[in-house]
Structures are given as structure tokens and as C-alpha cells.
Image (tube, rainbow, N blue to C red; front, side, top):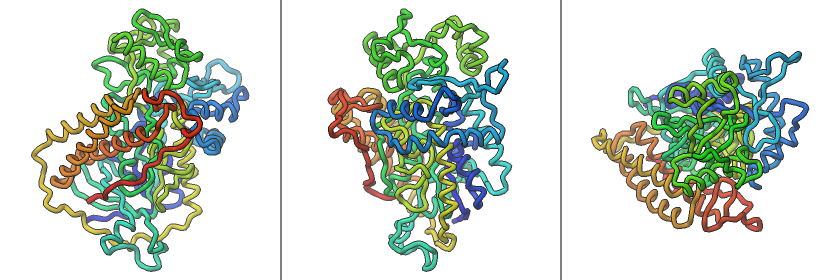
Length: 549
């Protein structure tokens, strides 16, 4: 079996992964592994921008307050302050690397064209039109590809983490003098699958960074690209790490509703520029649910839309931004405008049909701001991590900010920590056992659809004990079927992703069943109010019942 060695292994090539790689490359050799094309990531589809205090009218205190309010009492205030206050330095770094944020024309001094989104009390969203994520990805990828200390491997999917505890169970592990205590359970690398050759190989690294993003594909309807299958969360859970607050799944309120517009997001920035949510008759309805109207936080807006659709039986609601001229809409939202126009929707003249869909995971692998997890040698950064910034509901455009700050803090921490010796650790060959090539691919497709339909029907925007109980039974049976399939047949990317979404589904369901209240993104009909006396706590699961083969 081929074994590759590096100083730092980064899994994922979005903003969290590339920022981690760029900072770590100053300290050693970095290998970035990504399961599809290197530019394919959730970051690449981010439209809105980066929330950051950039003007004298705004303040860190206001940004912190808005974040805490959106997080419904579960944010870690110290974490929020640290990330918010470090934002400007990271923005300056992006600009030094060549990223150009939109500016107001005709100003005597440089003035950012700051946007506003739901839950923000000020305009503080730095953007590059409505393709901010794509612009960030392009700049970071260009610098990473030109770095002599960074190697990027595309189309390789990680199967599982390799830990010294797991190796010890097979009579293997680090030699004396490696700097790893015999009792320490440390991450020392991964097993991975080369998609083109179908070869399974291993990677050894003193530090492994999970930057694998979220898992929107666990749900039937999502704004996320196909790669978002919760791989990092699932791998970490299988390795025994604590997974935190997985019940808090953010459903973006405004995904374009059109049969030819699969997963296309209409940015919250559209509402920030005055778009109003209306019903089919053109009547605004958000004022019934929140005094902030269409700019209320996402959890409130998504539930309101869900309620309006159920009341009327309508398949969607609409965004109305017809008060702006074509010139403004083309300039501010060029990508959204052209996409809508290609489908026969003129934003300047027509209502825009929208529905909610799964968008962002506020929970994930429990981690600190500098990426440390409960396992030495394993770090988590970006959407895969749960740092305490988002609490029970993420404030719009705080996600890219978190990835920027945490990647830099993590690299600083690793630069101060002596790396243990791992290159002499022997890894066992991958055990194929009696596995044979699959001749039942249709089973994978059926299981894939069943997992996602189950999650959408029973663990969506509005939940209940009965729905969660049904979901738990179905996912339990599906996970057992998938596990048997994984053991019987040779590993493929499809079975790995299916195994991961099923594991993540289990985590979401279990977390939701543990929270006996409604808070933030978790709303249940059986406990419709917050439990202020006993509900202000995190949900942590750490008991994966088995290990990989």
C-alpha cells in the first residue's frame, strides 16, 4: 500500500482549507486533499459576502450583539468577540493577496459598498457582487497552487482517520522516542481512495486539519453542491470525537423555486437591498412574525415561509424587488439577475419564486477558535467545526469570517507546538477482506434517496417527537444496511458518501431528540418555547458504537 508523508494534511479546498494551507505552508510541507475538482466547494457558491466591522458607524460591540441575538443564547461570547475583533486583519490579508471588494463609485476616499443582511443592525457585509465566494476561491487557489510548499490532490476521498489508539488495537503504533505517549490517542493520518485508479492509500501527517465543510446533501432539498455530504463530521464521530449541536441546521429561506434551477440560492443580500417576501397575491407577510420583517434572522424567516406555504397550500412564496431599476439589479446582483433571466424571470418586473432549503450546519466537531479538537493531532476549521460562534443560529455572512480567522489562529498554534515524529509509524495495509465489485448500484441510489427524504420529511424546519422517532427507526435500519454494503463490496466514492450522510443523519436526529425545547434553528411542536431554566446548554454526542474496517 502506498503511504504519503507530509507535515500538515488539510482535507478540503474551500476557504477554510486553503487559508489553513497558505498559513501552514510558512511552517512546513502541506498536502491538500479534495474529493472533487480543487475549486469545487461550498465557498465557491457563497454569494453574500463576509461580515466584518469596517466603518466608524459600526463597532465590534454591535457585531457581537447581533451575533449573540441570532444565536439565541447558545453562542460562546468570548469566542464571538475573538472572531469578530480579528476580522479586519484577515480582510486586509485577503486584499493584500489580490481580492477586490466592491466599492462605492464617485467617492473622494475609498469607501466599501457594504451590504446588509438579516439580523444585522448595520451595513457590514463586504462583497464582490453576488459571487463573493467564487472570487475568494479564485484568489486563494491561485496562491496555493503557486506555493512550493503546497501540493493539492484532487479527486481523492478520505475514508477514515487513522489514530494511535486504533493502531494499538492492532499491535502497532509509534515507537519509543516519537514524542507520543503510549496512552495518547492521536490522529496520525488517514486512509484515502484515489477516484480514478480506485487505489486505496494512506497519508501520514503530524497534524490533520478537517476543513471538509457542511452536509446539506443529507437533506432532499439544499442550496449546497453535491460534495456537501458531511464527511468530516462523520469521520470524526467514527474516530470517537465529541460532536456538538447537530440539531441546529440552518435552512436558507430563499432558494429559487424552478424546475431548472437546482439548488440555486437567491442571496440574503437581495433582501438587504429592500426585497420583501410576499405571497402569490403580492401581500407582504413577514411583519406578522417579526418586527424586522423580511430582514429577521434566517430561522424566523424560514419558519414563517414554511407556515405560510402550509396555510395556503402554495408550493412557494415570492421575493419582490421590483422597486429597483434594471441597472441597479444588474450591477449589484449580476449572477442572480442573469440566472433568473435565463429562466424567464426578470427581477425588475417579476416576482421571484423562492422556498427554504437546507443550507448550513451550525453544529459539528467540537473545536476551539484555533482549531484544536479533543484529539491531539486533529484540527477542525470552518463549517465542519463547532466553535461556539453560531450558537443556535448563524448570523448571515459570519461563516466566511469564522473560516478566515480560525485558519490563521490554528496555524499560529501549530507554529508554537512541537510536532511529534510520525513518519516511522507503520500503518496496516487496507483490509479488503472478501469484498467484491458491486453489482447492485441501484441499492445505493435507493438508500441515498431514502436517507435524504427521511431527513426532509421528519427532521426539517418544524419537528415533533413523533416525527423524530420515525426518523430514528428508519435511519437505524438504513445505517445497518449501508454498513453491510460497505463490508461486502469494494469501496467507491458513492458508498463512502452514503455512509457519511447516514451517520450525519443519525447525529442530527439524536441531537434533536435530546433538546426538549425550541431554540434557534430547532423548533419542535411538542416543546414550542425556550427552556430558560434548563435549556441553555450544548448537545454533545461522543459515543460512536463501532470503528471502521
